[in-house]
Image 1 (cartoon, helix red, strand yellow):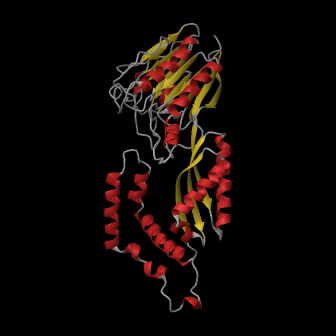
Image 2 (tube, rainbow, N blue to C red; image 1 turned 30 degrees about the vertical axis):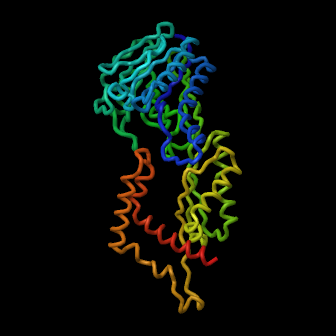
Image 3 (cartoon, rainbow, N blue to C red; image 1 turned 90 degrees about the vertical axis):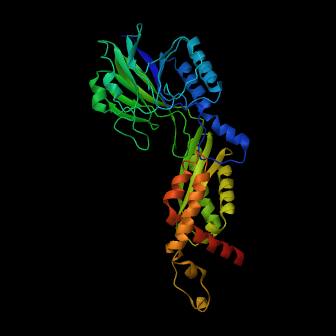
Length: 414
């Protein structure tokens, strides 16, 4: 049997907006939004430089119905580069680009093979003795175990199953085309190229059952490197699987403990060190970072009372580390140290004491819930990461409000 290399990718989500990132700089916002296209272009470059025999895409090429033909034309143009180099492409449709979801189409180049949705189908590459088996989604929601409908392997050939599936369940991903690794292994294929789950994961090595992960993180919930899997085959068996990184923008979460930190300079030095590590890991890519500050610190009131000053200083620290590092959000989860009252406090009104217990006042909590509901209605559909913080953390919001009041009082007193 011939030796060859193929590339397994999934979840391109071309046309997807970047979610939860509010940027005043419109040009920068466009750069984040174009990252998925740039990542796919990098994937094609990689396929050409590695001289792969073929590319497998395991679903969700598009993020949904096209607003116009530009995204389809882009995809067709990039596939044209592969076609001219003799690289064939095999793809299934997933829940985001199912037959019923994406109704528009652009004619794709010869050498691009799309698995149908009515039943599973096999495509053969005679020269390599490779058979690829797959089935696309007809609708967004598929409850059927599609793997059980896949054909028997071609005896003596290298068989690849291409499937968009949640497998046994991978929260927060929705459950689609459920199946088990045992059921996949029982089909007798030599490799399973899976899509739908955005984290790279090898479910089994014999035979290899692999999620390639998506090629570009789309929100703060999809942090870290993103890419595809390069698979080497010799004598009908996988000899190597190498993850290749193609993302062009990176998301990161940074938690900084400010416990025992008593001055702003020390706090920002600690923050800058953490941001520097993320910038180094991003290797020059566009970077969006969510910073979470924790710990018991005497800076608590100031951090809560001057949120714009805090964000600006953190953004400045990010730019000192990397010119393309941007702060997605700052979450202040610090606490004020407990202290015993001093003689100087006697006879004075203590704002903290006056506010203590208000967060348990049912009337005030009802008003707060009403405000949160009003805000929720006005949030745009893409604010998926903001909504849970508003809905589920009323206690935290009340605590933040009290800390903000105390911080503003301290600011006025300085």
